[in-house]
Image (cartoon, rainbow, N blue to C red):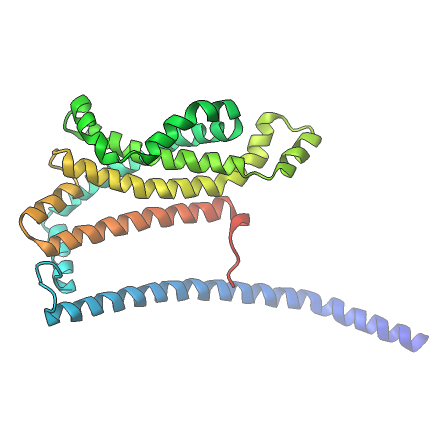
Length: 290
């Protein structure tokens, strides 16, 4: 019995002694894996884009396709660099980006509360949903003549079409987020005596946050389309859409592709910023990597 007790205590002591060491090693390994994963993602993205544009350059040099429609990648980036250096692109880029950001903020301020209200109140849903779904399905380009008639040519018309393009995806996603909240969580909150405001703050809003982010991401894509429609058809002579239209009129395909790449980078950058915000605001919603 004495030897068994000694052995058990020895094992226990050994286990107790190695516990902190194992924990520290696991934590160090986790940090190293996290840093390697971030570096790996960046390296894969750079390699992927480099390969894509190298293949583009090689195919364009064969001239199997008309250079007017498929210019070399080197010509595209040369046109982009020239436009950035000589001051042609920066003011138009700032005009488009500022309009898009302002329109998205206005859309979020309007769309998020309305979506949450429609998701939580059946009466509000019945009253507002016909108008919301009608505007979701209505092509934005059909509104341009009416907006020009009401607001004229200018920045106010462009901002309005951005807001009308972005606000309804945000509204619909917020509404869907509230409707998918687990009812057992609401019942648990009621059991513990939570008020309606506390239910929203502690249960509904945290659960709905990923839907809000998803709606804003869709709003970014729709808002970008609305921005281009307003700049192409609005006739204000400002923005990346104006440069795109001007390059098309001059048959300047490298500049056209350069503007399209800038628009893609702008859109992806905004979407990735929202994804970073979601990971910080709702880390519990992160999907574990396999």
